[in-house]
Image: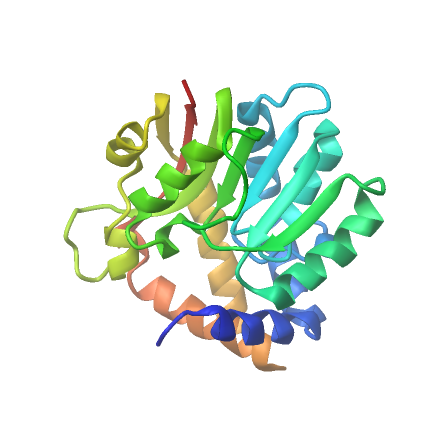
Length: 250
């Protein structure tokens, strides 16, 4: 299956009419359903990411691969940052704009079509950059990290969540995840102060989400998609670990 913009446009369109899908994620990850989260970062994970981004007062935050925008919008709400979100799904960005008008002051958020490796944003324009569960979609992930470095001002911070193979080369792990090695690639992209942490508590919350999803009645296309992803994820669950990486742009 090709996971291109057309695929994700339909994925997000199905989500938009599926309160059942959002309710599963909200219950298991401790997230407010009104922010319409699409990824698997927990509420406590958002708090950790907010701290590690070290946004200055009135700072400039980028959310790359933002999807429906909930994570970046929540961090901008907590910090008072100016938010710019980038995603290649125009359908997702429509939701992000709608959610941001409820959560952020007018003029504090903007959302644009772009990719992980071609954001269309200027050099050095951001104080902090976040990427939640998306860097693996770049080919290779290092190309995305290099683009992220270009976007940050000196001293700017990056925080990203993803998965890595527990054992390198394990073919139970999707190819795009096997390509992720943040401890190796963040320094290659020009970052310093690199920290990569295993997050077993986040991973166990994700397991609970998948288990609850597959046990739910099949109500609509978005729930079916979540259930299929859950079944595939649970088959090889122990072959991957959850990671949270932070670094500084020198």
